[in-house]
Length: 127
Image (cartoon, rainbow, N blue to C red):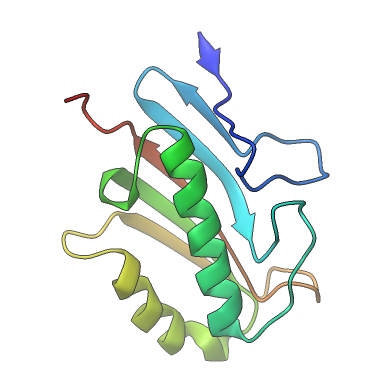
């Protein structure tokens, strides 16, 4: 059975996709960008957009019963390759060794975004 975890404060988009889907203990988080709770893009510096995107991903993971410690893989989209050193520095604030598997692609977003992230995670074990 596929689940579609969502709470009123889960970041949503006006586009046709769910913030996450869950099958068993696997959680698939859709791309999270620098948007507010209504899906409106919030333009900022690269750091500001990455932090907002990561915090949006944190909310989606929590809604689905997970967190950053249970992320298996991330896919990262960085518009400007010059931001990669800052990206790596900030990434270490959210993930530590052993790091999740990761793919990073540059020069791939429209003009409105500097960063986007998606992930695959597992649910936290029930206590």
